[in-house]
Length: 146
Image 1: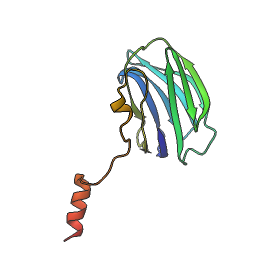
Image 2: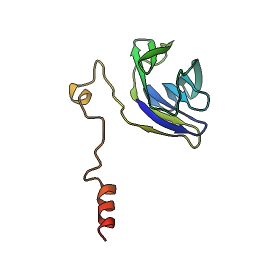
Image 3: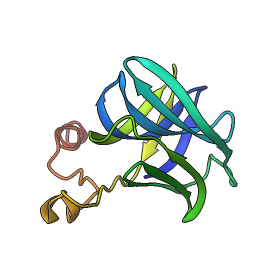
Image 4: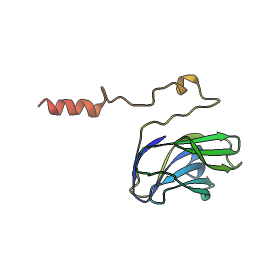
């Protein structure tokens, strides 16, 4: 995940083993505090795991990566391992992006999921979205031609 910018007092993170908002893990980035924190939601109760300082300017582009292997979680920042956590509570679930807090904004360029059980067709998808032929682009072209 590449985050270009963030504003507000909230967080953006990589959610994994997600069942719903009350049952998931998140490695969350706080622009305000310049930290990455591990979080677990189980039965609606949120628990914070380790919190680590981010070694760069959060307003610049960086690459965040979570590697999950069994009950071991590793968090990478620009290719550097900066955090580890372990939990056995949730064993399966979906992967996604999590936003929290009022006014939280971020731009995500690439979001790539790889691993066992994920088909090659999904792993090889182009991550960027082309605006050509999309409604907003078409509407803009129509408005400009008038």
